[in-house]
Length: 311
Ligand SMILES: Nc1ncnc2c1ncn2[C@@H]1O[C@H](COP(=O)(O)OP(=O)(O)O)[C@@H](O)[C@H]1O
Ligand SMILES: [Mg+2]
Image (tube, rainbow, N blue to C red):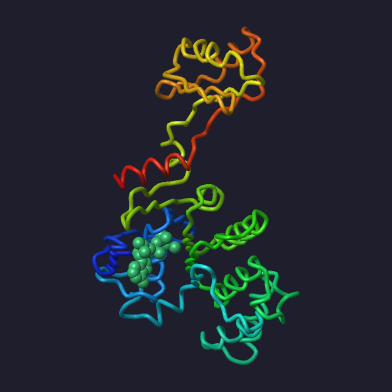
């Protein structure tokens, strides 16, 4: 288990992390979400022992990062923001250096480095200087460094930031593959990432936790949850269609989006309105391009929670 208790970091007058407390158990993949400047990196650095807290403390598998740093760090794999590495080294040299720092020697060191290189598909580039590698490969070197000692806890700071969509997908698959018996914390400001890889989400805003729930619950908080969007083939008659939708039972209100040629109907409470809207579209012979039941929009939940906090 890992634990933050009243974790606080002040930089002069700024409170970057403000009394943050949470626990994470094995099997949990925690998405640590928040806008830029929210305090994600600072929180992770305190777990990694890179930054001492102003007050409170962090614990990794029962060991306090401040008073038992060696034990705590031995159980942690940490990918710092931007995955820094020594550019003039090759992946093999860099991982060999990290393995030595972790205390491995001889055959075991070679095996650890070899395994990490296999795991992250770095075999073809193992002898190429890191500064000449693509962003995706540099990130893989950073991940290889983090898993080298097979730690029970992984803390990854924006592991997919700056990668192209294929590389993002690849890193997410890797995280999913490793998640079975580990504790994984990833920070991100990308909403779909939480939905894709995490089974728990903590939203942090201005250094404070403002939500802690499953991605599904978070989506359910969206005002779009169970709303139905009708996208019309042509722009004419949007307003009259909106009027028809507004008159349906169980429809609370409708919103017209002229630029998307669409009308979104919002249900009253938990009512399901999709079937009624499908029937109406048939009766009126609407030329429809798309009829879409919204599950909820995570980005909108995120904005509403963090904006409320900022206000
Ligand atoms: N070493 C530092 N000195 C002063 N302020 C800092 C330092 N590191 C971070 N901050 C500030 O702390 C806040 C939180 O930053 P950070 O933890 O990097 O946020 P995030 O990772 O969520 O984008 C920001 O306002 C940032 O400018
Ligand atoms: Mg950050």
